[in-house]
Length: 468
Image (cartoon, rainbow, N blue to C red; front, top):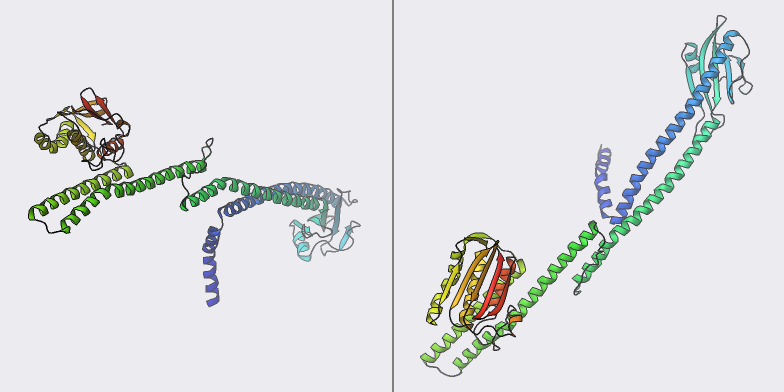
């Protein structure tokens, strides 16, 4: 019992093993095998159908010849006349009930064509039909015979008629050879075409793989060569991979710029902190001097915090570009952004006014409020006179402008006003990090809009235009 159970378990595991083996093959090999197996089944079915139709036609012809000859021979036996001539290749025998040959064709002789069982069946009135010899392998004297009982002069006779199958078998063997040759050539051609087609279809994939490997090895500015005059699955894959490469390159560029910007801009306040601490530790200091040093250190630490927060906000907006829109009253939005700067303006003897339309806008207040606050802070820090915030909605777009009454932007500063760490003053020790306008632009772009800086007749003006 152990051996059959083991064999049964092996047979049950065989399909999974075949699937595993097939899955380990290269894609081109799998496609060619699939085409070959499918074509083999189709060609086998087609060849069988053709062979069956031809065989049926030849057998029908043999059957008609045999039935005609049998009918004429039966009449001759009943009438006691000489057997009529039959078709080409035909034979006959007339037997009595004991199987003795009473009359026969010269080519047959005295050897009975029927076996004892067939003779008994024919004697009982049943028709006997049988083929002698085989189609394959080739055998001589292939016949198709038929035997029937005939009553002649009160006696029982068994009349056997036969037709040679040589021409029929030769035609079928020739047909089999031609079908095998045609099927083999067709299978080879189909497999070759399938192989060439699979290679041609997968050649771009291999090219994409090679390019991706080069990118993984650090190849710069790499893009896949995608044909522009096609629109198939492989071409769309190439475009998708190119977009992915664009995103990866942009992400890597943002990361490099973030690290470079952070290291460059954090160096100054950290150096100042180190200098303040070194001076404080150089000799004993009075309480007033230590207090002044701590205030200076606190200012630099706050500057580091503001700079880090600004860099992180810019990186978050640049890396995801994701905003969450929600309905908010425009007047409340502008009021929330302006409120923290009113005391600063009052201490400087300047005014801040807000003029917002009484409507609801669909924006991300989490980002838009600090963007407006940055514009107001810049106007208070670098401008002069009163600061005015105006916000209107027209044709589904929010247009928000912040203006002051100062001297405006230096002309050489306007082209790079929204660059990171760009300052109108040349000194890096001046107040501000140079990230405010860059942050405003990032917020506007994330909303699907833009921002513009210009000099108006009365001072500087920055305008944010976003869909709402």
